[in-house]
Amino acid sequence: MNLLSVNEIKNLLDKYDSSPSKTMGQNFLIDDFTLNKIIEAAELNPKDTILEIGPGLGGLTKELAQKTKKIIAIEKDNAMVQILKETLKDYKNVEIIHGNALLDTNYSLPTHYKVVANIPYYITSPIIRKFLESANPPESMVLMVQKEVGQRICSSPPNMSLLSVSVQFYAKPKIISYISKKCFWPSPKVDSAIIKIIPFKKSEEISHEKFFKIVKSGFSQPRKQLANNFSKSLKINREKVNLWLLKNTTNPKQRAETLSIEDWKNLANSYQHP
Image 1 (tube, helix red, strand yellow):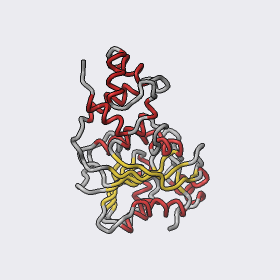
Image 2 (cartoon, rainbow, N blue to C red):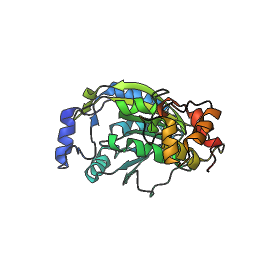
Image 3 (tube, one colour):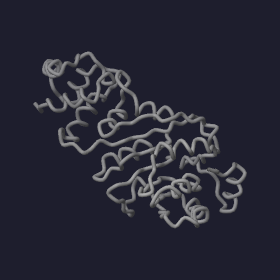
Image 4 (tube, rainbow, N blue to C red):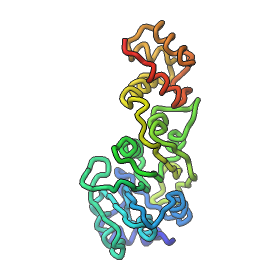
């Protein structure tokens, strides 16, 4: 593996009259060891189709292309698209799409595919949610994310958040490795984490709409007690809320961050609109 050096990146960007975009969160990976960690975590095989979001200069794309059947690389920045056409010209199994991975639907994915990406931090949550909630979720997602966000996604009670519940309802996430900000150019302000997310098989045991209605109500004011949040947001008197919670072995004075996914499922399954 041999990523471009900082000088090589600068020369390539100058050639296309471009520079790293802060608004797009462009920080280019310059550490081969980290690249290898991502590749290992993806557990690639020659039959894989990979969706890469924000391939940038194509360093990760090249490694993916050498080990898999096809890469669908979606890049929003027009200058990067032009650079990718140069850096990936020798890779016939790479399809470069100029578009927005969050909004566009002008690309088709096979039934089985994986997502591998060093994604801009500002689209982490919506990207994960989009693919986990889709009718055709990936087999796995290996993502480079902000360290704190990775920790929140993988947290457990009593440190849950709306984000961790939203991801863990659909999938099992885990942190593969922490990555120093020095492994990127330009260097971001914070360290990163490589996380791997493996979606569960589809289950109809509970209505997703009902589940998230209860979860969002519980987290409506995270620092307040569950009974207060449910009573106010669901418009149920406090006594009924207390009984409902106690029937599900949940203390009305608990906070939302202390509940497990199973706790939320039990509450959603037993909830009856007054």
